[in-house]
Image 1 (cartoon, rainbow, N blue to C red):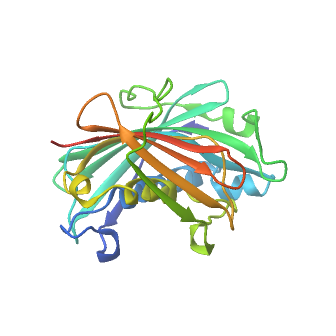
Image 2: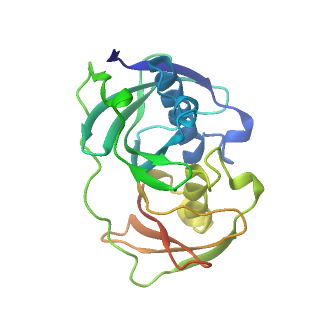
Image 3: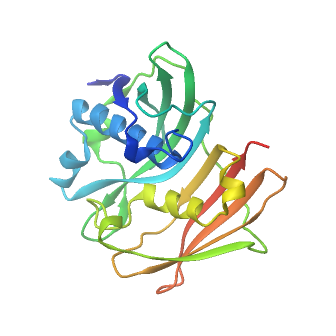
Length: 246
């Protein structure tokens, strides 16, 4: 079987916008993941297909760049395709378009396969690697390399893990981590509009945990560095870098 790009259409809903009437970054990431789900379902390797084998998909990294945020009621088209493999890392790209064909944003992501019982990453099984990756678009540059740590956090906040933070994998859903990173920041930063986010998921957090969110200045005025840590285990859960419009 060959893997081809898929297209999914979404309408921006009122529950997914900020007070300027534009879709939020977590909402856009949710659209992209939903499009990925549809594409993998058509290939027979969706999360449900993996769960039947005691496995699941886990997002390891995602880098998103937005050129224009769609507004409430606007219809968008999310195109996604498998863009390559590196050992246990599977790459998937996304592009977001308006109905008129305007490129609104793009993203590249890295996925792993996890054993749901052992909670450990495993080698990519044959039923996935047997699918030939045939992207018909130029792949975006892979998200690679380490992210710098915030040396002196300027903003901190504690986030208790509650029932609605948990997803099908029984851990905090990745869009919630992204939301917590942004919720830690003051209004004057959020009003500048997020241009780019690069986020690495390092460990899972479960119901009853408390997450410490920290953010500090990056290498430029428009850049912030972020870290999420479990207060129960001390594990670093997430690293991120955000870039804002000046």
